[in-house]
Structures are given as C-alpha cells and as structure tokens.
Image (spheres, rainbow, N blue to C red):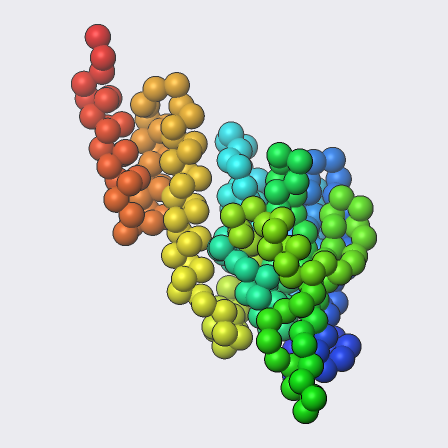
Length: 241
C-alpha cells in the first residue's frame, strides 16, 4: 500500500497520481510549462513566462540547460538524467513529477509525468514494472495515460528532468532513486552543454575559455572539457598567422 506524501493522492492500491495543475505553454515556452506543472505537485505556483524570462540571455543549448539555471534562481535544484519509465514511476511514487524529454517530428517535445499504474498481485501487493504513466502535455494542457513501452519508445536518449527543493535530496534517495548516478549524469550533461556553447564560437576567445572553465567545474572528473580548455588557451597564446 502506498503511503500518503506531500502532493500525492493514492487512487487505488496500484495507481498513484500526483496533484499536478495542468499548464498550457505560452508561445515556445513548452519545457517551462511542463516544469511549472511538475512543480505544482510540490505546492509551487510559478508562471511559465516568468520562468522563461529568468533564463540566461546567452545562446541557448539543445535541452533544458538554461531552464536549470532559471529554476536555480527561483530556489529549485534540478537533475537531468537518463531515466527509464520505471525510474520516472519511482519519482512519482515519492511525490516528484519528472519531465520526460521526447523525440517528435525531428524536434524535442516534453511531457510532465504525474501518475503510475502497476500490476496488482492476488494478495493485493503492487508488483512488477510500471505498466502505464499519466502525463500532462504542455502543448494542450490535457492529461492522459501512455503505456510505459510507448513512453520508452518516444524518449529522447531516455532523458528526464526532475526539479525539487534543496532540502529534498534525502527524500529522493529514500525513494530508491539512484541519486549518485543521476548526479554524475547531470554533471556530464551540464559540462557537455557548456562545451557545445564554446564550440559554437567562431574561434577560441575569452568567452569560449570562460565557458570551458565552467564545463571543467561542472564535471571535474571528465578530462574532455579540460583538454579542450587547454587547446583554446594555447590558441590565444599562439594565434594563427
């Protein structure tokens, strides 16, 4: 039997549904709307347009990197990780609504995950993998259910975003969510995003070096951004004729 948690309503022994307020996107602010809906399960009331306005004004990356920075300014920690539907289900059962990043018509789409259904054994226990997940589509603000297999098929690199209070790290860990692995994946994602920004510069310059220094700080154990930083620094010391 599922225990009641903050923002969680248990509809049946094998169905857990979060109290998510549907949010429809404004303009292109799709992932902001999905994230605002997700945070409503934690009792937060944010405006997607205000959240979008908090994003850094630098050239955007592919994915939620700038959104992570905006959410930090609003007091929320985030993790971008390679999450399966089952990992999303565990977060839902712990009271957190992750955002699944999908592949649709050659462009990224997102869904807020807000509920899960599992198999029920004859003795009433909820067993096995997640069968279906409830979603909120920010394009329309509508909710519905999708099979776990179909969600897995649509996921873009199996990537998810979860946002949470800075005090909730232990709650994630207690729910069986692999915080250590997710943190390492998040560090690698942030460093990769910063490297991509540096590589888009026309040539090595002070800005690309600053971006690469941030990449090294984001994932100190990864040698790739450090090696690229050395290349950019050397290029400034010894520019081509």
